[in-house]
Length: 98
Image 1 (cartoon, rainbow, N blue to C red):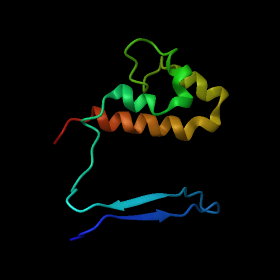
Image 2 (cartoon, one colour):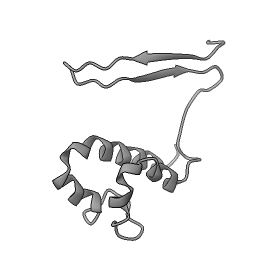
Image 3 (tube, rainbow, N blue to C red):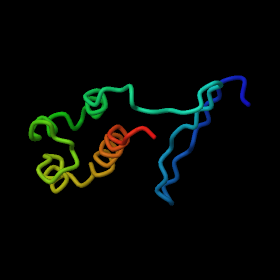
Image 4 (cartoon, one colour):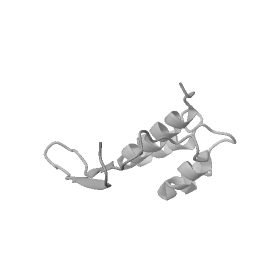
C-alpha cells in the first residue's frame, strides 16, 4: 500500500513508436473513471478538433458514418491518433457501469 503520491515519467521511444506518458500512484484512489465528466468537457479538451466537430450532425456520437471527423481524417490523416483518443474516451463514457 502506498502512503505518498508518486508520478513516474514514461519516456518516448521513436524506434518502437511508443509515446511518453505518466503513471501516477495516489494513496486511497482505487479506480479512475469519467462518469462524472460531462461529454462536452471531454470534447472541448480536444480544442484542435472543435472547428470540425462544430460541423457534425446534432447529437453526433462522433463514432457514426455521418460524423464530420471521418471526412476530416481523409484530408488530415496525421490527426488519426487524436481522433482515436477522443473516440476511445467517449466510448468509455457511454459504457454502462458494472
